[in-house]
Amino acid sequence: MRRMLIRYRTKPELADTNAALIAAVFAELKAAQPEGVRYLSLRLEDGTFVHFVETEPDAAGVLPGLPAFKAFQSGIRERCIEPPQPGSATIVGNYRMLDQP
Image (cartoon, rainbow, N blue to C red; front, side, top):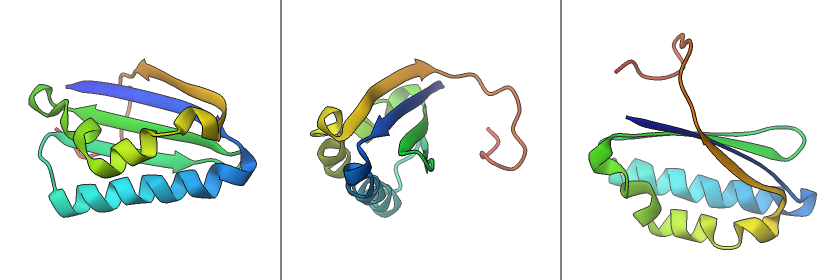
């Protein structure tokens, strides 16, 4: 399983636009219900967004292949003050936040 944590900060006037684009991704995920993908997105007070993505090896292309995700990624750098900083993540502890494998 691959786990990624991505952080970035949007321009204040574009934070709501960014959140709406993310909401569209979650709506599409809910409708499609792909297996092997887990995704969490948080919006912090300062306009920082944090995304946590878990994918099984056979589902690695599911999220990037969604039309709503492509729309979200289009122009992401222009919406940001601080560009996306991706990195792998290891869960150290989890109490009722994430499904247990």
